Image (cartoon, rainbow, N blue to C red; front, top):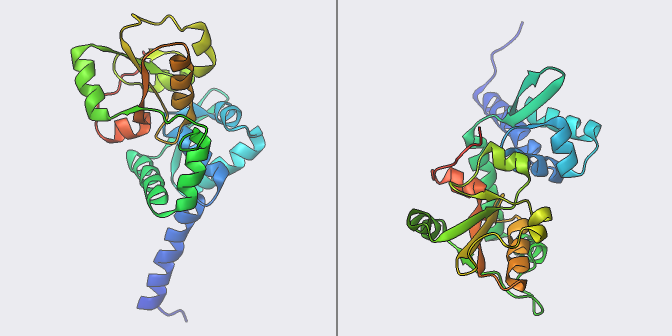
Length: 229
């Protein structure tokens, strides 16, 4: 004879299920994959390459995320395409980043070191806010560079942004009128590509700043995003 679960048992069962979702975030490699998927849909092969993982390892981590219902898939021929299960997953990831930076000095220190800012031998990168950039886009007095990989640009980018992947930037320094400021952006506030792009541009005498955050925060704030057809 079975007995119905008691209130405390049902309460514990709920938190057990909640912990499964929490555990899906408890891996640096899975966080990298979530970060990439926050930019748009990608294949297993593309995710593995960009994350520096073997395909088998990437697939295993993606399965954990799928079992936690944080990602969804679609098949196209022999290829599996992954995407975040919803915008709320991107919001959860973004909120985690914000909380971690706000409450963990170690996280903030690691990020500053990664971005190459705040040290005695570095020059802080000047930033432009989303609100200021929106106003300048309306006026048309700024050149916006998307320095992410081309497939991320194709999945979604700021209105009017030019796709110049960071690895190709050195070959495209004559991008516009030298009197027009350039604003570079990449995946998010923690992405080093935009900071490195600004350093390269300023070393060549260009007036350049980075967007204060990136495509993730821009989209979650409800600002317009263009998709290349």
